[in-house]
Length: 290
Image (cartoon, rainbow, N blue to C red):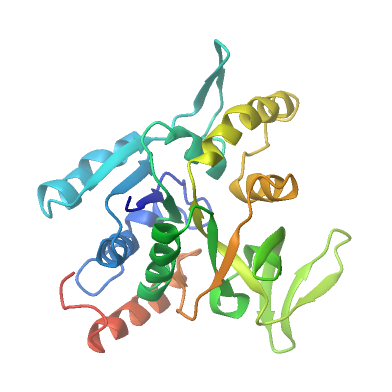
């Protein structure tokens, strides 16, 4: 069965200052998600599911279904969770693992999960499709950290540790910045710690099997117990994958890609991203209009 593409598009874009997933950055008014959907369907993915805020649905329905007749459907990431007949409400959605849990009833095959506001490149989707269409195991398409930095501020990345090509752990590195001396982040004691430029990081391009939903059903209950005592907690996907790996529920194949990542963490990143996307149109990687 052909895999599905699942896109996390419900983010609030707090550092960016708005819904960056809907920013028109390409030379013909493309948003980054347009490229991901285009590249995934060309690679062979059968359908696209967007996890969104409800207010986005009219805009995206017109863009993808009415105009382009693409196999796109929607899941709303709510700020409520119902578990064991109890309802919990938060001021905002709980994070990326919660977003994935919201899509549990829509997916019946292997699937690739990505961020709406990250450009991953055509070969990244081809690599993911090749693995997910031929294997019954999950994967992670990863980038060298130097290709994922912003010139306009710090970024957070999950550094990948692997052995024999398989994930053994991922460690969140916060406030990573580039300087003339190299790439650094503060460790838990606030000390400046160097990160090698070729260190592999996850940009949330995960290939999953439906087995993850069985884990989430039980694990979300445990998360809510902790959340009730600290309501700033978020239910994040890298933590779930790391836990499943340590418990040997999942064996995740690491697939490095040589593609150039493009993203917009800050408003000032837009100009750089626009120039990179325009170059891809000019060199023929993409047609004038997708």
